[in-house]
Length: 429
Image: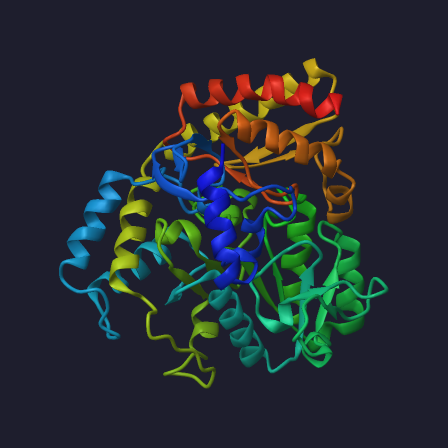
């Protein structure tokens, strides 16, 4: 029962637009009442009605160690006792910058911010300032935060500029953004052939997670790197989701590609609001106060948030961490695929590190168009069937899922047992 969640949701809608502070939380995609949570511990969440759930959202990725990790909490408390914010440099910022530049070979210098949106917005401004060019290339289905010029969908043709996807965004702002198909090397070749001298940057999720989990081909990444180098454009990997989530060097380590700029968030904050962007020293030298590209933030490098991120990253970067996490995630998706097959349901799943995707289609998708072919109604029935059995999945067929180091054999077995009955319900309806 979700009686208390229902009461809270009704009250929230009177004072918060839609009753939520981020749209996907409203459950509009799956229907029903959003769950209001009261507590998290390890791999588990407890809602306002006292129901317990195995959590596969993980605050949309940051909780790679699980909820309320004792070491992270201790570091937060220790730092908070000395003061919450100074608006001035701290040694913790230096520690974080040194850790990030040491861990990611492509990042020679880094600037801390407070969110992924802020990181990508700043990185693109920096790329334009560095190149002196206006155009940005992004890919359909990739989300890079809610900056005006990134809230854009594909135009009417393969090489037309994008149209706003949100009211309040003038078409003039998105007229400088070219939207291409994800995982299509030839389309990128064509775009550079036509617009190469005007392209400031290409930005992408190196493994997509905002249209659900889509792993691109090696050829796609290599094409991007080659063309950006050839034409003098800045290649930006948006690793807000994948950074320290799919591997110790993010997706760039998995694919062996060195981007010019990288944006980070989620895991580097350990559950608190931290973002970052960094990359080549010559590009970062264009950033104020040493260069002409302006960026600032009162809470950038907040000591309490950075302390949570440092405590998290030191554990994540320990030898063997990603071997164990990857094995747990693989056992989940392989088990789900087996249960779906036994239930006679078209289903596929894929994973990398602690990130995964599930799809109600016969094969894992390789593009935004293929993701959209998934059976959304069947997913919605499966989502609610799992929720009733104490398994919390992302409330949308178009969002990736996340496993933490706190998920163990017991949580996976409980999830697969719930899936056995839930697949049957999804098929029967």
